[in-house]
Length: 83
Picture 1 (cartoon, rainbow, N blue to C red):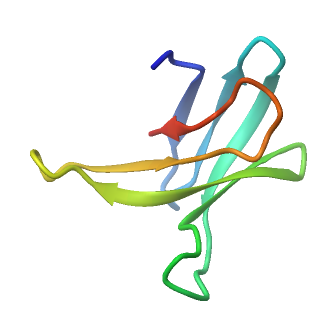
Picture 2: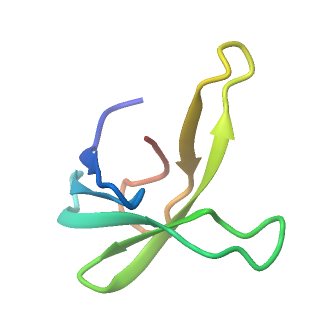
């Protein structure tokens, strides 16, 4: 999978950075959000105040490492992320 973004985590657990694809070049944030059910996302992805994706916290089976993953709701070439 190609790297399409670079993010830095802040003290509140939010990520800020840039997403660059063939059709996007935006500053974006990935912020934790309140969950109202088991299938709700753990994170919301926004750029310029517009939500265009969501993410979930996951744990790797083999290593136990925690990561963030999920689809993005966009018609661009942004089809998912892992942070």
